[in-house]
Image 1 (cartoon, rainbow, N blue to C red):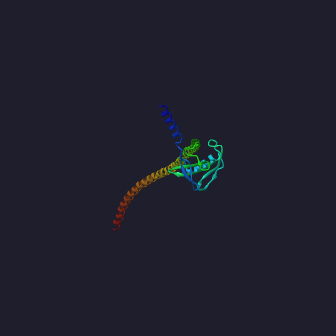
Image 2 (image 1 turned 30 degrees about the vertical axis):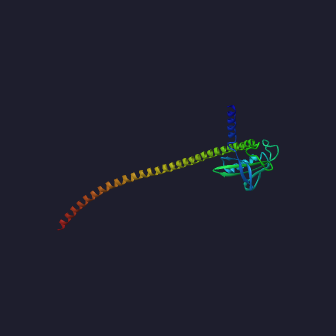
Image 3 (image 1 turned 90 degrees about the vertical axis):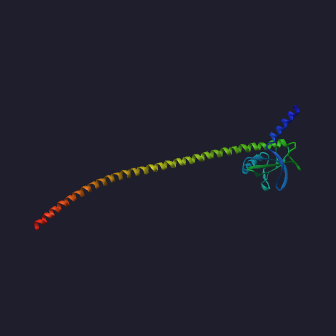
Length: 223
């Protein structure tokens, strides 16, 4: 029973340790290479930049054919005392970046599943995954911050625009109010003139009647 429990713990530990790293083959510089790979939730351009910086700690980084990133005398103390030939490449798969690494410890001897250094190599690669994940989190948080700042800027511009619109509306209201007052005065003048016109017409009609009477009286005197 104890052996079963111990075996289960070891299996679980192995799965946890290698959950991000897989063994396989890929083509680097037009040749099939054995090695291991992982998937990273970050854009390929960021993975390439970060991967190069990570490899600089272990040797001179050289650009190979087809986008390969190589270190021919890699000094990775956790894997070997001697220089290692490290070839790698990145590619995009299903919105993730695949990083494939082939490490040769000797002629036609590559670190892969079953190799005595595979656990250390996996840990070494997972250290990089931790770094790139932290960097990606920084980019994500920075983007979120920039989005909020951009939103704030848009809101401030909108607020300034509304202040200008309110100021314009106020001026228009003042002009309309002034015009309304002027129109009211004009109306009162027109009404007053209208009343005066009625009085003038009535007076003129009365004057006409009186003048007609005088005219008739004058005619009678002539006849």
